[in-house]
Image (cartoon, rainbow, N blue to C red; front, side, top):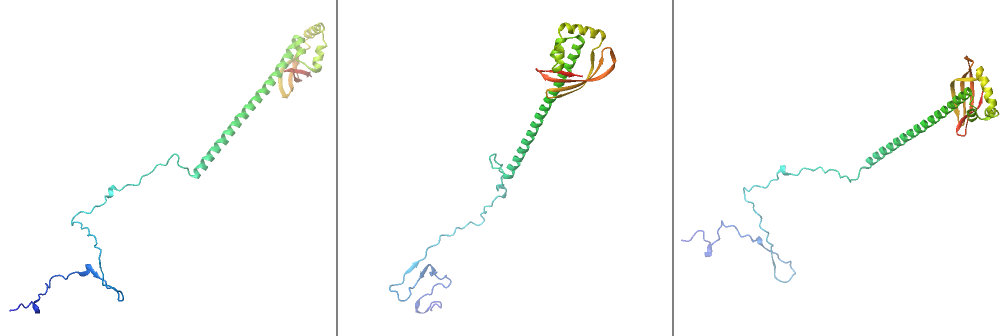
Length: 230
């Protein structure tokens, strides 16, 4: 009894459940007509096997806590400064220099004014000293001193006296108290090498009667001298 599954001619069909052979591994390319020779079969290049990860293997994750945080880099000392900062420091330095120059000028002016004031005060004191010396020499009859601290016509009047005549004249004047006395030096004005002083005087025999007199002085031979009195 023949097997119903056996085909005719005694050949057995392959397993119908078996997968058909994959002939894609060997592709045949037929040369177009007109070319001589047999058909060439080009072998396909085998692809590398795909890496298979085992199922259930944990995938490597990136720990967010280990990510590098941004760093703050401090500025270098030699780093170039912004143009605006350079201009600002330039203005500050300029202002400081101007203030220092003004202070120096103020100090210099104060020193010069102080010296000028001290010099004027010194000259005024010298004028007062000369007048006081003249007044004392008149009362004492000191002819040498009167010749040394006078100038011009006033000095000539004392130079014309000889010592004997002056001594006799002064004795008579002193006995009668007919000589002037300087009570106070009221005002002194010094201009360069000239000076003028206003004084209050009285006669020795009449102290209650006061009058104002003036002295004209000149700076000669490194000292103030009385050139005229009236």
